[in-house]
Each structure stands twice: as C-alpha cells, then as structure tokens.
Image (cartoon, rainbow, N blue to C red; front, side, top):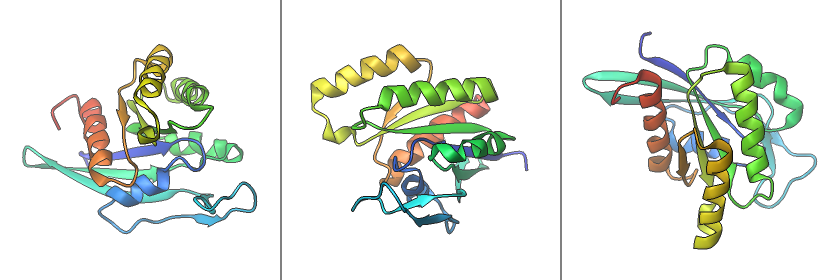
Length: 181
C-alpha cells in the first residue's frame, strides 16, 4: 500500500510508549506486557517484552495515510529488537521523561543509535511529564536538548492525550512524505 507507514515508538522503560499507542490507536492495540519482577512501582507494574501494535489513519487531500504504530521494549536487554523492528521503518518517535535524571543522556543514546543504524529515518522527540517542571527548569531542559539533539523536532506532550500524540504523528507524516499530509 502506497500510503502505509511503519512508525516506531522508542524510549526507556516506563516512559509512556504503550500509553501513547493506546491513546491514539484506532484499532485494538496488541500488547505484550507482562508483570515486572524488578523495578516496579505503584505507577508501573508491567513492562513490554515483545512489542505493542496499533493503527492510526490520517485523511488528507482525499487520501488515507495508514500509520502502523509499533512500541519497542525499553529494556536494554531487548535492544536487539530495535534493529529488527527498524527494517522498513518510515519514522521514529523518541519518547522521554522530563523528570528523569538521565533524560539528556537518553536522548543522546537513542539519537546516536538511530543515526548509526537507520541513517536518515525521520524522527521526532516527544517529552512527557513536562507539566511537573517549573518554567525555569523547562527552559533549561529545552536548551540542553537543543544543544544535543536540536536537529530533531521536539514536542512537549501528554502520552495519555490523543490530540498531543496526533500532533506528533502529523508532524512525522509531513517529514516522511515531504508534504502537508
């Protein structure tokens, strides 16, 4: 199918990949979450061990654009799956947690890994939990991200809110197609 795109959601464990796909998918999400044996909390007691899958269709200029959404496991032990899932990938959404102490290091790690393995695949960065930062913290974080990954579009989002995920997907689709799609 001409307007059929494979989109990967990547990021560390617990960042909101499954939540984002569930928020925006127009089909029943296929998930491979299992109970965590270590590192669990009241907020996070399951983890993705395979992948999540959902679908989102955008209609633009009388054309449908099907975006197949794949949530990649965030645990480092599943890093091998990133390379497998990147085959045929049209675009990547890197999700990151604004409150995590390793946020900038995570962004550097993932952007370098993507550049090395997939080269020119369009990618956007989506930052979660920004509402927990004060204005100064958010400005400082924005500056640090711009210094390390300024060549990627960045969004401040809520993974639970479908409209914020739709904005990211629309930007990524525009980057993929080179049009106003």
